[in-house]
Length: 440
Image 1 (cartoon, one colour):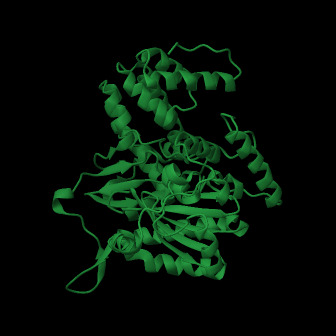
Image 2: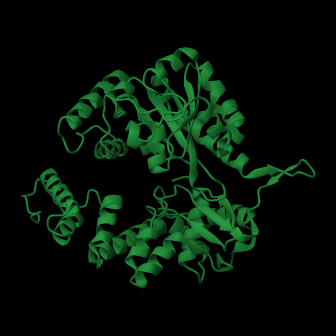
């Protein structure tokens, strides 16, 4: 996959008959709400998973999310929020387009609380009827499946089309949202969203909010020097300096910290650093080409990518052979080290999701699969069932063996054992297997 291109699973993938598609998904939604444990065919996997999370959170499909801040409290909170610094940029990139196209722009914090909702007056009036207003909470826990909330839950730009929304009141709307990350930590501090009619289902809407999020992140990473008035890169406090570190788990592209200063990486650059971190002795151009590209690729392509990468990371990478010039810590290597030391709890705590989940580089795919295999095996063998329970709830929701093992190991009569046994029975029914779980 080309670096920097979003995978199709984040797009709404609307057909030539959006009304018919919306009716089909609405029927699937109603079937899910009336007792189906798994949404029927025809529903995107990310939407199906979001519906399941919404149901587990007991979201009422007919209730509106709460408004928790208003008036002076809301103004004080959002004026102090870091996103207030970049509101002008977001208005310029998204707000103007939303107003002209009869849509809405919404900006929320990392908890899904709406800070600003702006745009076409008629659409704002309609949005008020479902509490899509400033001060309301639109995370999945309170509002079910929706672009801002689901983007926060997944940490990715997301498009939600019409009846893919969990709450019925929102199913005439379509939205696209992207997380905005703190340049210093890489963690989301909020979301930029565009909401409106079916036209928002176009892929350009998702590209728009993603570009706006990137622009906001870039602006947050700079400050105006008090003496010269010139904008310069924001520096971190001396006591916050950290060694070089690569963060790739659960990241669509990657974050590199050099001497404590973070930078977001294009996916191909993240893949190169990942592969070189796995092979500290270095690799030839042919070896790196095979590791990066499915099928045969001219090693000249590697030389081009490494030239671009060195412009970003300086002397961290050298050629002949291609290798790292100094030790580079990485989050996925931390997981591996914890597993080797038998510290299963530390391994799970360090695991924030799949290794570069959108990457198709052969070496990354292989490392991703091997890491998941090691981690899952370790969780099944963990001495404390609480560790296995955490794994099941975070990463093993569809894993029958995990839930059956958990149901057998938790204390008889405990609520968590009953939940594990129920989930195991549910999965056995879905897979067409006979019931076989521990008594509760």
